[in-house]
Length: 253
Image (cartoon, rainbow, N blue to C red):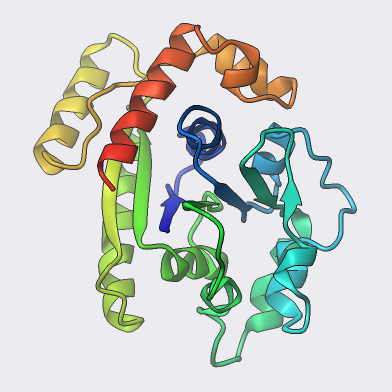
């Protein structure tokens, strides 16, 4: 089972878009079984799959704070066969305060997922900031995918993630954690974008994806309807690019 976290400490990089649509790609196009864990307090991954998380319970918050709650009561099927969801919502914002001072605060998620069976992939959509939730995601995952919007500040955020990963490897004895892919996103044909893309290729010669992903109207429209690109417009340019990224990520396993 592969455990893949989509992380960038800067917002607006396409993190949730990739987590949802690549999870759906693995389930629909590759016949894999996937568990998507929505750890963003805004619940955007859940909403992108048509799940209304307002007032929803139980969610990942209850799973992380109630050791007696079976994970089977939190996992929800989605409209896509093979793709299940561990939903999240704004209640997750209370987790750092609830877990503060407990010795297992960084391993709550990993502990609750230990022994999980029946899935080929566990995919984590992390919050767009460094927090105790993000640390839990990194401890539970073995691979990190970093979507990087081709702007200066997103590139800076990528460097911060690398520092965090190295620190976490040492502090939590997690040497298996690695960056499996860096995906350039929101590409526009400008000199600045090309310069940042060149820097990414120098810094991540092995990890950078073959595809450079631009803005997709079809993907944006699909999310507004609570659908994945495969349900909405699979043959659009956005769908074709997403499929290429999915195939490459599958190969990197």
